[in-house]
Length: 171
Ligand SMILES: [Zn+2]
Ligand SMILES: [Zn+2]
Image (tube, rainbow, N blue to C red):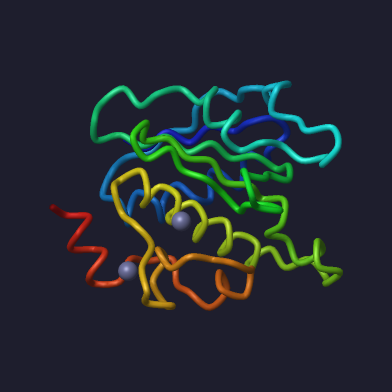
């Protein structure tokens, strides 16, 4: 079971749209958990961003060892030493968080495109959940586990695992 957790002001319909493809790719059922508030301690007043690790810390732990939990926020996230992150995973805790904040075309001054937005969200979701299932970064730029430094890396890659990552997932 994959648990999807809306955090703060996150659109539930986006989470709904992630369910079917996530179930297909991980071969598990999914459910949307109750919304939880953004933890106050994650807000960094000077940066005007939220600290990803503080958000990971308040996510519920998966109940079974095979489970993964994905939190979804619609605020800007940062991590130690990075200006921003699209997402972050707590590999040992099998929890991950993604941010929708920088995935919309309008963030870059372009007209809204719902399809592109949902595709990016799915890629980030599969990528961070892939980490919680033990996968590292993949050198194949078409693989969903390829590291996205910028959004154009995200747009270049697919939402599926390459054959090498797929085999690693199955062991
Ligand atoms: Zn990664
Ligand atoms: Zn791969």
